[in-house]
Amino acid sequence: MSDRIERRIELPTSLELAWRAVTDPDWLALWLADEIHLDPRPGGEARFQIGSETRTGWIEELCPPDDRGAGRMAFWWAVDEEPASRVELTLTEIESDRTLLRVVESRPLDVLDLMGTPLPGHGGAAYGPALVAA
Image (cartoon, rainbow, N blue to C red; front, side, top):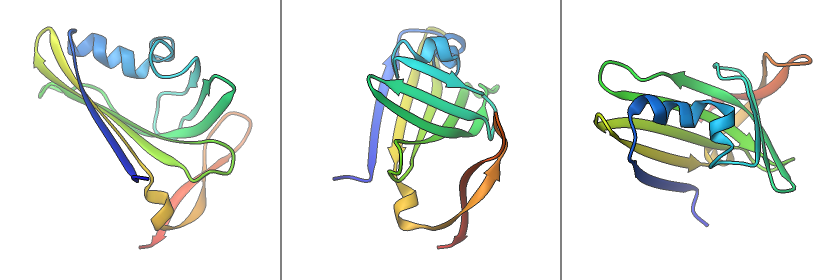
């Protein structure tokens, strides 16, 4: 089994609409999961319902499209006690009506020494990764 999956998809839409498709929970639910609850800010909670499976996690990074025509969102997710995966969604404008979406999912937590770090969230602190040694 690979520790990294990468896909590139050319979308026939503007960067603005593509950004909405990867950051708005209602739009994300059209292609990523059946139901999504997302607090779109660094440290924000994320929950993805895919069939009977629930993946929970947090937002690591949210960089809206800039003047170079690129934007990025990264989040972590896991099912129950599984090791967490990091998912990075990167958008790059090709033309005004074409955007490249790059999706990378990796499992770097399996090989790092980590400790829990409190992260803000609904109902109190949740715990996320913090690198203490490599």
